[in-house]
Amino acid sequence: MIRVTRSTLIDAPIERVWAVLRDFNSHTAWHPAVAESEIEGGDPPDQVGCVRRFTLRDGNLIREQLLTLSDPEHVSTYCILDATLPMRRYVATVQLKRVTDSDRTFWHWQSTFDVPRGREREFEHLVGVGVYEGGFEGLRRYLRRSLDLRPSGVAARPARIVGEIPSHGVIVERFGGPEVLRYQTLSAPAPGPGEVRIRQTAIGVNYIDVYVRAGHYRMLEPPAPLGMEAAGEVLDVGDGVAHLLPGDRVAYACPPPGAYVSVRTMAAHQVVVLPDHVDDETAAAVMLKGMTAEYLLHRTYRVRAGDTVLVHAAAGGVGLFLCQWAKALGAQVVGTVSSEDKARLARAHGCEAAIVTRDYRFADAVREATGGRGADVIFDGLGRAAAEENLEALALCGHWVSYGQATGPLEAIAAERLTDKSATLSRPVLFHYTAQRAALAEIAGRVFTALHDGVLHVDVHHRYPLAAAAEAHRDLEARRTTGPLLLLP
Amino acid sequence: MIKVYVSSVIEAPADSVWAQIRDFNGLPKWTPFVAESRIEGGLAADKVGCVRSFRLKDGGVIREQLLTLSDYDFQCTYSILESPMGVENYVATLKLTPVTDGDRTFAEWWAEFDCAPEREGQLAQSIGQGVFQAGLDALKGLFRR
Image (cartoon, rainbow over all chains, first blue to last red; front, side, top):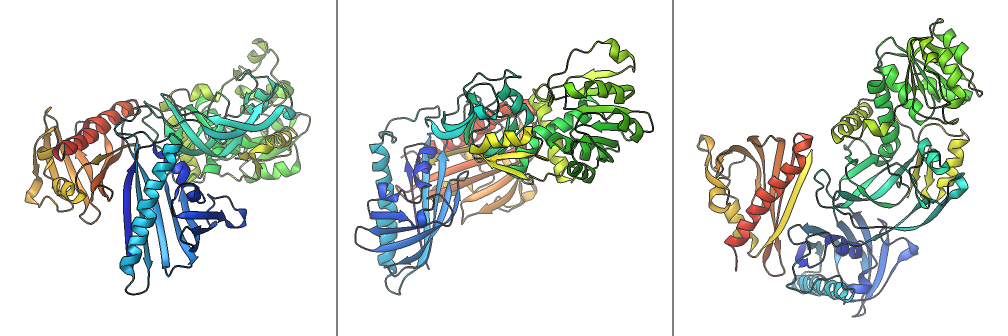
């Protein structure tokens, strides 16, 4: 077995070098020994398993298959499938690493293979010098032509010098219905101080996105991308960001809107690193809704064993989390849902009594389910249509927590109305509870632990391509969905 | 858990640089910030499990344990047992890789650790720049061609 290793330094940032090398078909553009190359079957050139068929300038034909590709680790491996050269069992690894004190790139290229006895020296030279060293020089020439290589002797700029990265996403053209969502090409600028750039893999759809799209919450000025929640991998970070490194798997749920994109540059402050046991889709499904359940159950109102908890939209994204978690805390959970199917789902998640109502009449049923006492706490994401019934359904000294308004904003409520039951009314917002990083870490940490311990369980039934965000909104608003909705870039 | 990662290029062959840093008791010889160091219990300085106790020039005393040492990979890892820095679960790795083009060395030094959230930025800076980068800069100076 022959092992060939070559390594060099390239005077360009790792992101620039990797952008070229991660494309398995790019070698025609930069490698001097490659004449023509194509990816068989028209597969994307960064899809693991794709096969490049290429001819060398000396006439030889080679087919190679991409075996692994990791963007966070800047590494890829590939093997020769067949070749007109007598090389067998050829497996190669390309690894890039960042030289942090000069913003250069270390490039390590290594392979092992067998050749007929007596020809080892010939092939070691062919691969090491002809392919690898020739490739190093070829890539330098290629980067120099596109002005991405610094002239030798010029110091690296201290700041990140990578430019924009192409992105695509869904913007709100103007305030209105789902039809105002438009899919288009965007770009993600290099991260400035305190910022991070994330290649997103899963994006959460939330009811707050509907409010923002409709203009109820003025959190953006159209045209601008929508969305509060996503998960993905860190591409690069700006100065002063100590808690994230390129390659980290991360997630967030925070304003300002802008999550419906494939690559996002944003403030790093609200971005948290994911533990290994939480995959990207789960993270995009739980960050906003799970953290909402955490603060509602532990902070706005502290649920104790024996409490009676009323959860509206009990089969919805937040609703299912509230049911599971409140049950685990020892509460008796009563819920409202809009169909029998949703009632079954809510019951399977810990909701003891699921009230099916499509006209927001539930107070009598709640009193019945609680022996006439009513609910100690109501977690209300419905808003206007349920307001009167909520006051009816509340126990003495009960707490009405209005955290959403799926049926429209609450109308003014006279303070005296609360006196009737010594009731408490809260109007909490997740982002106030997570504004401090220490609190955010605590809330997110408790959600991850709840997932790990099985207290929270997520089933994602609704995945849409990012371009189909409008369809996701239509389904959500028509109450056709249960549990979380994800957009996949 | 926060991570600090620093890397650099040293203008000398990797085996020469490794000969300098594989001595777990050798910090005073090549770093600018360690005044004196000893290995506890009379163990050899390349024995996995040995503990170095060293005093910084600013007076602080740190105890670190050697967790792995590979002459084949030019790599060692160690953890902090005691320090005045206020870090927990601190594990660091120092790794060299030969650069075949020019017979140079690519050096990486990184650590993962826990600390109070409000101290993350300051510790990342003092460890990344004050220790790792300063150490690599000292090695670069030692081997300047």
